[in-house]
Image: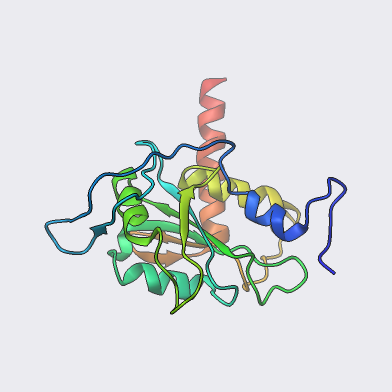
Length: 198
Protein backbone atom coordinates (compact mmCIF):
# COMPACT_ATOMS: atom_id res chain seq x y z
CA UNK A 1 0.00 0.00 0.00
CA UNK A 2 1.11 3.54 -0.68
CA UNK A 3 1.56 5.51 2.59
CA UNK A 4 -1.07 8.19 3.12
CA UNK A 5 -0.66 11.25 5.33
CA UNK A 6 -3.36 12.68 7.59
CA UNK A 7 -4.55 15.01 4.84
CA UNK A 8 -5.36 12.06 2.60
CA UNK A 9 -2.51 12.60 0.12
CA UNK A 10 -0.10 9.80 -0.62
CA UNK A 11 3.53 10.42 0.21
CA UNK A 12 4.39 9.98 -3.45
CA UNK A 13 1.88 12.64 -4.44
CA UNK A 14 3.18 14.97 -1.71
CA UNK A 15 6.67 14.55 -3.13
CA UNK A 16 5.42 15.42 -6.59
CA UNK A 17 3.42 18.39 -5.41
CA UNK A 18 6.26 19.76 -3.28
CA UNK A 19 7.81 21.46 -6.31
CA UNK A 20 4.54 22.60 -7.86
CA UNK A 21 3.66 26.23 -8.14
CA UNK A 22 0.31 27.09 -6.47
CA UNK A 23 -1.19 28.34 -9.70
CA UNK A 24 -0.35 28.29 -13.36
CA UNK A 25 2.32 30.67 -14.57
CA UNK A 26 2.30 29.28 -18.09
CA UNK A 27 1.20 30.67 -21.38
CA UNK A 28 1.08 29.05 -24.78
CA UNK A 29 4.14 29.50 -26.93
CA UNK A 30 4.26 30.65 -30.52
CA UNK A 31 5.38 28.97 -33.71
CA UNK A 32 8.22 26.48 -33.60
CA UNK A 33 11.75 27.50 -34.50
CA UNK A 34 15.38 26.54 -33.92
CA UNK A 35 17.97 28.71 -32.25
CA UNK A 36 20.96 29.92 -34.33
CA UNK A 37 23.16 27.20 -32.83
CA UNK A 38 20.70 24.49 -33.79
CA UNK A 39 20.60 23.11 -30.23
CA UNK A 40 17.09 24.06 -29.18
CA UNK A 41 13.99 23.35 -31.19
CA UNK A 42 10.96 25.25 -29.92
CA UNK A 43 7.83 23.25 -30.69
CA UNK A 44 4.35 24.68 -31.12
CA UNK A 45 2.20 25.05 -28.01
CA UNK A 46 5.12 24.91 -25.60
CA UNK A 47 4.41 26.35 -22.13
CA UNK A 48 6.61 29.40 -21.53
CA UNK A 49 7.82 30.13 -17.98
CA UNK A 50 7.64 33.68 -16.71
CA UNK A 51 10.77 35.79 -17.11
CA UNK A 52 12.00 35.32 -13.53
CA UNK A 53 11.78 31.51 -13.48
CA UNK A 54 15.11 29.65 -13.39
CA UNK A 55 14.09 26.46 -11.55
CA UNK A 56 12.03 23.87 -13.42
CA UNK A 57 10.12 20.79 -12.37
CA UNK A 58 10.28 18.05 -14.99
CA UNK A 59 7.46 15.55 -14.48
CA UNK A 60 6.78 12.08 -15.92
CA UNK A 61 10.39 10.93 -15.88
CA UNK A 62 10.82 7.15 -15.47
CA UNK A 63 11.12 6.09 -11.86
CA UNK A 64 14.51 4.49 -12.43
CA UNK A 65 16.15 7.80 -13.39
CA UNK A 66 18.79 9.09 -10.96
CA UNK A 67 20.53 12.43 -10.60
CA UNK A 68 23.44 11.08 -12.62
CA UNK A 69 21.19 10.07 -15.50
CA UNK A 70 19.37 13.40 -15.37
CA UNK A 71 22.67 15.29 -15.55
CA UNK A 72 23.79 13.13 -18.48
CA UNK A 73 20.55 13.93 -20.32
CA UNK A 74 20.91 17.66 -19.68
CA UNK A 75 24.50 17.70 -20.86
CA UNK A 76 23.43 16.32 -24.21
CA UNK A 77 21.81 19.70 -24.87
CA UNK A 78 23.43 22.21 -22.52
CA UNK A 79 26.93 23.15 -21.45
CA UNK A 80 27.63 21.81 -17.93
CA UNK A 81 27.85 25.37 -16.57
CA UNK A 82 24.24 26.06 -17.61
CA UNK A 83 22.72 24.43 -14.52
CA UNK A 84 23.81 24.25 -10.87
CA UNK A 85 21.20 22.16 -9.02
CA UNK A 86 19.67 18.80 -9.97
CA UNK A 87 17.46 16.81 -7.62
CA UNK A 88 15.40 13.70 -8.33
CA UNK A 89 13.37 13.15 -5.13
CA UNK A 90 13.16 9.49 -4.06
CA UNK A 91 10.16 7.47 -3.03
CA UNK A 92 9.74 7.49 0.74
CA UNK A 93 9.70 3.72 1.14
CA UNK A 94 11.86 2.66 -1.80
CA UNK A 95 14.77 5.03 -2.36
CA UNK A 96 15.85 3.12 -5.45
CA UNK A 97 12.92 4.74 -7.27
CA UNK A 98 12.06 8.39 -7.72
CA UNK A 99 8.62 10.01 -7.48
CA UNK A 100 8.48 10.70 -11.19
CA UNK A 101 9.95 14.18 -11.30
CA UNK A 102 13.21 16.12 -11.27
CA UNK A 103 13.97 19.66 -10.08
CA UNK A 104 16.63 21.52 -12.06
CA UNK A 105 17.90 25.05 -11.53
CA UNK A 106 19.41 26.78 -14.53
CA UNK A 107 21.81 29.66 -14.12
CA UNK A 108 19.58 32.07 -16.08
CA UNK A 109 15.89 32.39 -16.84
CA UNK A 110 16.71 32.30 -20.56
CA UNK A 111 18.26 28.86 -20.20
CA UNK A 112 15.19 27.70 -18.29
CA UNK A 113 13.00 28.89 -21.16
CA UNK A 114 15.18 27.02 -23.65
CA UNK A 115 15.03 23.86 -21.53
CA UNK A 116 11.25 24.12 -21.35
CA UNK A 117 11.02 24.42 -25.12
CA UNK A 118 13.43 21.55 -25.61
CA UNK A 119 12.02 19.03 -23.12
CA UNK A 120 8.29 19.72 -22.76
CA UNK A 121 6.21 17.14 -24.59
CA UNK A 122 9.11 14.82 -25.38
CA UNK A 123 9.58 11.31 -24.01
CA UNK A 124 12.46 10.05 -21.92
CA UNK A 125 12.36 6.69 -23.67
CA UNK A 126 10.41 5.33 -26.59
CA UNK A 127 6.65 5.32 -25.92
CA UNK A 128 7.08 6.57 -22.34
CA UNK A 129 4.83 9.31 -21.00
CA UNK A 130 5.41 12.80 -22.31
CA UNK A 131 7.51 15.04 -20.11
CA UNK A 132 5.74 18.00 -18.54
CA UNK A 133 7.95 20.96 -17.66
CA UNK A 134 6.71 23.57 -15.20
CA UNK A 135 8.21 26.21 -12.91
CA UNK A 136 9.14 24.71 -9.56
CA UNK A 137 7.50 26.13 -6.45
CA UNK A 138 10.92 26.98 -4.95
CA UNK A 139 12.97 29.20 -7.25
CA UNK A 140 16.74 29.64 -7.30
CA UNK A 141 19.90 27.77 -6.36
CA UNK A 142 20.19 29.09 -2.82
CA UNK A 143 16.50 28.70 -1.99
CA UNK A 144 16.52 25.08 -3.13
CA UNK A 145 19.66 24.29 -1.13
CA UNK A 146 18.17 25.88 1.99
CA UNK A 147 14.91 24.04 1.40
CA UNK A 148 16.74 20.74 1.22
CA UNK A 149 18.75 21.63 4.33
CA UNK A 150 15.53 22.28 6.24
CA UNK A 151 14.58 18.64 5.67
CA UNK A 152 17.94 17.14 6.68
CA UNK A 153 19.23 19.73 9.15
CA UNK A 154 19.28 17.30 12.07
CA UNK A 155 21.57 14.99 10.10
CA UNK A 156 23.96 17.71 8.93
CA UNK A 157 23.99 19.61 12.23
CA UNK A 158 24.72 16.35 14.01
CA UNK A 159 27.93 15.97 12.04
CA UNK A 160 26.63 13.24 9.75
CA UNK A 161 26.38 13.50 5.99
CA UNK A 162 23.15 12.61 4.17
CA UNK A 163 23.19 9.21 2.50
CA UNK A 164 24.75 9.73 -0.94
CA UNK A 165 21.91 7.90 -2.66
CA UNK A 166 19.27 10.29 -4.01
CA UNK A 167 20.58 13.62 -2.82
CA UNK A 168 20.76 16.84 -4.86
CA UNK A 169 23.73 17.26 -7.16
CA UNK A 170 25.13 20.79 -7.08
CA UNK A 171 27.61 22.41 -9.44
CA UNK A 172 29.84 25.44 -9.75
CA UNK A 173 30.99 26.36 -13.22
CA UNK A 174 29.91 22.95 -14.50
CA UNK A 175 31.93 21.03 -11.88
CA UNK A 176 30.12 19.03 -9.23
CA UNK A 177 30.80 20.27 -5.70
CA UNK A 178 30.18 18.82 -2.27
CA UNK A 179 26.54 19.16 -1.19
CA UNK A 180 27.18 19.87 2.51
CA UNK A 181 29.91 22.39 1.72
CA UNK A 182 27.57 24.16 -0.70
CA UNK A 183 24.83 24.29 1.92
CA UNK A 184 27.21 25.67 4.54
CA UNK A 185 28.41 28.41 2.18
CA UNK A 186 24.86 29.43 1.36
CA UNK A 187 23.88 29.41 5.04
CA UNK A 188 26.90 31.54 5.96
CA UNK A 189 26.14 34.03 3.20
CA UNK A 190 22.47 34.19 4.13
CA UNK A 191 23.20 34.64 7.83
CA UNK A 192 25.75 37.31 7.00
CA UNK A 193 23.21 39.23 4.98
CA UNK A 194 20.69 38.93 7.78
CA UNK A 195 23.22 40.17 10.33
CA UNK A 196 24.09 43.10 8.10
CA UNK A 197 20.47 44.14 7.76
CA UNK A 198 19.75 43.88 11.48
